[in-house]
Length: 65
Image 1 (cartoon, rainbow, N blue to C red):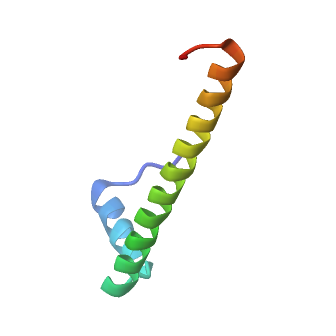
Image 2 (image 1 turned 180 degrees about the horizontal axis):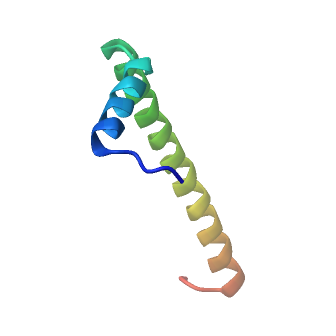
Image 3 (image 1 turned 30 degrees about the horizontal axis):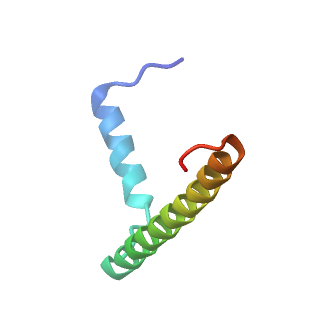
């Protein structure tokens, strides 16, 4: 494996970061909002599944009433 100097490494990193297509503020905001919405929906889904399974286990084992 060839060793590179720290200066060469920094130059290569700068060269690669100049190739990156960065999202606009609007694209980043929309993506963030979509992620938050999906997290909320997933958490509500898993809450509902957990409650149904908990109710089923209680009914089978005869616990809680």
